[in-house]
Structures are given as C-alpha cells and as structure tokens.
Picture 1 (cartoon, rainbow, N blue to C red):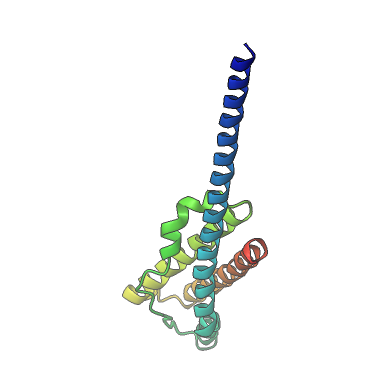
Picture 2: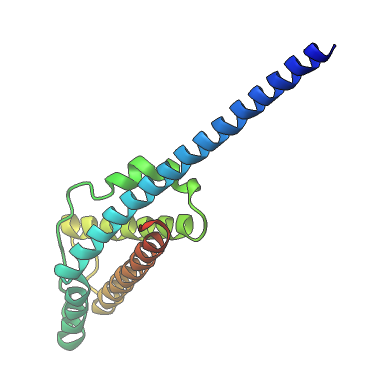
Length: 168
C-alpha cells in the first residue's frame, strides 16, 4: 500500500509540476507578446507624431483658418495621405486586450480620431470643402486643428505610458 501511495504522490507532484511550468511558460509568452505589441504601437504612433510635427500640419490648418477669418474667403487645405499609415493597428488590434488601462482606451481614441481626420482630408482632396460659407469653413478647419491637437496629445500620452511600462 505504501508503494501505491508513493506512486500516486509522485504522479501528483509530476502533474502539478507540469501544470505550473506550463502556466509560467504561457505567462512568459503572453508578457513577450504584450511587450512586442506595445512597442509596435509605440513605433507607429510616434512615427505619426513626427510626421505631424515636421510637416507642421496644425500650424498650417490654423494659418488657413486665420487667412479665411481675415479675408472672408474660403480656402482649401490639403495634404496627401494615400498610403496605409495604420499597419500596426490593423495587425495588432486583437492584442489590445492584453494591455491594462488606460492603453486600450487611448490607443482606440488615437486611431479613431486619426482615421476620421484622414477621411476628412481625403474628402477635401477629392471634392473640396463642400461649402462656400466662410464661417462654416472656419469652424471646420478649427475643428480639424482641435482634432489634430487631441491626436497629438493622446499619442504622446500613449508613448509615455508604453515607455514607462516596457522600456528596459
């Protein structure tokens, strides 16, 4: 009977060891995946922030708005965004649940606002402003500049959070 108890105890220890080691291995893999996804998002978002800054889009929007206010004449502002700029987002969106708050919220906010802004720009590039009313055009460009400022602020928040959690 004691041999049978020893075998059962040894088998239980072996099974428990296997379960624990598999749990640690899966936990390690999940942490590596979370880190690589976070750093991929950081790279894409930071690159977009650099583009916005170096191309001075916010100030250009504000200067078009100021021109319209001063001259009471509708002007079009356009820039080209014909490539896919959200490759990481499209390929890693299913990993967003790995992150703790507030990253999922902020990443979603960033890309939703950026997508809406690019959609507006695409429409302007193709059709113009669709208004001859100066005051409507001024409000539209003011809103675009505010969206872009919100995108930049949110993007910097994301980069800061990711740097604090995943930079070694």
